[in-house]
Image (spheres, helix red, strand yellow):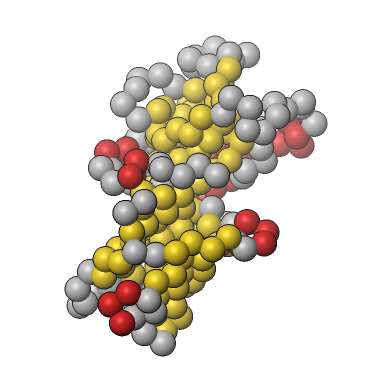
Length: 224
């Protein structure tokens, strides 16, 4: 998507005006028949459209779960480039022409500018990805362990334990290789301070006596 940023913002204005009306519309039960999907967002004819990765179909976006995806897309429209979305929802027929159906978004995992997210070779294998800045750090977790990358230091690949906490929070921790590494995760909207992208989890990394903050999202191997 290379449309002018202002085009997306203007095209979405009628959608925001109707948000209150849509909120009163009956919604499908959360979790029933939902599918996790990744793809590109664009605006056309006053609608926000979603094109799944590797497909040419376009679906009109309806925020059935009040995820804020319409506002998030409008906020990011100020920057040029492909707008990527990672969501959970259902597909249905659309009442409007010019699209291939309607995408009923129930959960928003992330929305960000990216030209490569659709072809990320690691996505399906990961259970979690977390990252932050100042200083930069990146953590990838899967069923085989977790890998922590920081500039100027070798990658730290270690096994970990996961602990579930109240209110949907959880932690990943390890004491392998003589280091204690802890990642604390909470289900809260998080904005990447470098890119402006939005993810559905806040993360706090504790390592080497430092506490580093960032954002996180579930990989393709985890959908809870």
